[in-house]
Image 1 (tube, one colour):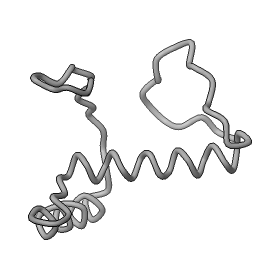
Image 2: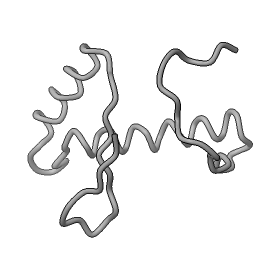
Image 3: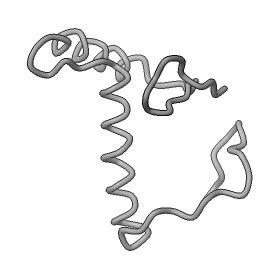
Length: 83
């Protein structure tokens, strides 16, 4: 489910996904602990930074550092594709 964010200078969308309970709990702990000065971290900012870092790693490892090609279809729910 994707919904555009309201009142934002940067285009953002809402994404619904499932995470391990322990990972989400640790991320929430970090966001609360680092919410104030100087980090001013939010859970959304933490997730955004983590996805950007992982995408850079995946591009370097699997796509010669280049952006992945645009998809021609939306993601399908269900079990992952077997290798």
